[in-house]
Picture (cartoon, rainbow, N blue to C red):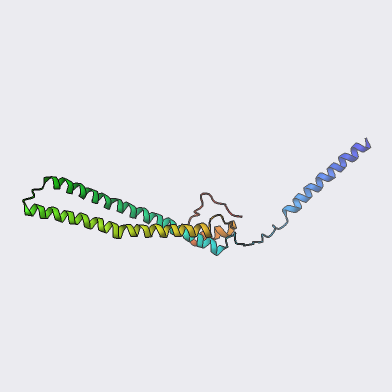
Length: 173
């Protein structure tokens, strides 16, 4: 019986000791986080640059979509004029000089539209796509798959006055 009392007393002392240890641990100051930035960890300046690049990419994508929509409209105008020329060619009186002249002016307009599309619109489209791809490449090289400290990220987002662009907040160290 004495062994049983001793075991119960020892158990009570151990449990009390654990409770004191947990209580004492709760009053301890939190451990200081030491931030180490390496080539795979974004600094606060890197985070701001990445956020700016991300904003630039979003803007370029919107501008490119608008430009492509404009080009699609211009292409439709070219197709409509080509269909109109085909219809008029079949109906034209080749002996009527005014009708032939009017038709030729439409042909010239159609040719000028095609030239404008090929010499101005397409190179501009290629340039805009190239700039967008370069920005994406820069982002992928400098920002994607890099670690960061959550508090640095949140501070940068707040400093820039933007919404957190991550699909879900909380992706840092």
